[in-house]
Length: 268
Length: 268
Image 1: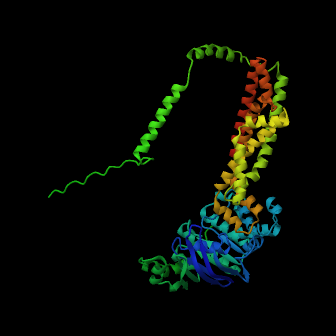
Image 2: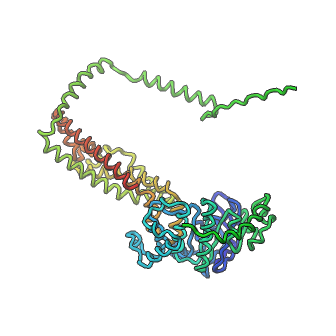
Image 3: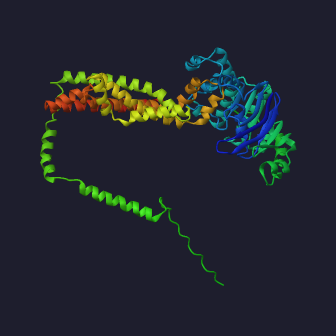
């Protein structure tokens, strides 16, 4: 459904963040993108919705080529690629409801959004999503009153109300504690399954990636050095991605914890 | 065998200017300049001494302030000053919003940025009194000239601070709204406005306060308002009326100051 062909990004400073990357994500697949800081993970997903302009290469969503779209068409295309951010990126001075509804901005006219008169169907859907993540009673709270985990759930609602085909997720757990991290990852994966969404999840945490994703792609210095199932990540592979380190502990732990994880429920 | 105690490593803060010749040269230069400057200033202590009793008489004639004999003039002047202030603040801010948006580096293209920065720089070059002199020459005596002068000064002040506040906003919140497919105006309304609004309301109140005080100054060169009344009272040596006018100005400025603090707290 998403096809990236020979994607290259060179920044004005001369740094090459991505070197001719090829990647194909089928419908409904949750893919974890791992790699050290500066490997180009953020650049890659930002090239897809063109928050960062690619230097070379093609990106196709369905049969639509994203790299050549004009600004009006790009806006339309962005509706079907929702993004979830590392520091939640909620607009802090807006209410929870306004933040969720901002996911509909690509669908409603300026005047409707300016006067906050969104179609009733959008409001109903917003409440439904907030209920799903257990935050419907917080609708009129200001976003900066929420805790980290709650904010990220609002961020997820904002992404889903766009009714996207693809989720671009940038380090969703980097500012969360370990338990909330797992809850958020589980929530994202469950929602993707419910709705048949494809997702590219940038993530630092190899363990979390292996726990939740069906496919892992390892990026190093702008190049894909691993693409396969979570179990295929051997110490050698991790050394290839991150560099020399003792990886045994990381891999062992996965096996121990993956059973116990199933029993943790989402706490609201 | 006794090992020699290791030499103590001393540490000193690195000086701001590393080259000692340049550093001492600069310090010496400033000191010499100050000495020369003070010796150049001629102070005729005899005249200072003669001025003291005059100051006493002058200030003495301010008391008691006389609100009653010229109350009609004071009232008309204050009302005129107030509406000049309201109109020039509203008009100035209304014009400075587009100019400020254009002058924010992260919002506009290079040529627009340079043009808007130019507009701001020009309007900030001239103090209110010079602008008022121009305006009086162009449009004749009266409050219209004063309003034009104050509006232009407001554009320079408010536009520059708005542009700088926009440049300081959190780019990730802005990115998040952009990624929903929002249009440019929707993006302004949902991502930029909530971030800059509280400070802008505070600055608007502050500018109102400045415009009121400056309306007294532009009146002195013929721009209408309380300044004209104040000047007339000085010309007639009715210093007790002048004192009354000054007290009224101080009261209104203090009132605006107090209420702006209250409003700022409320919008935060």
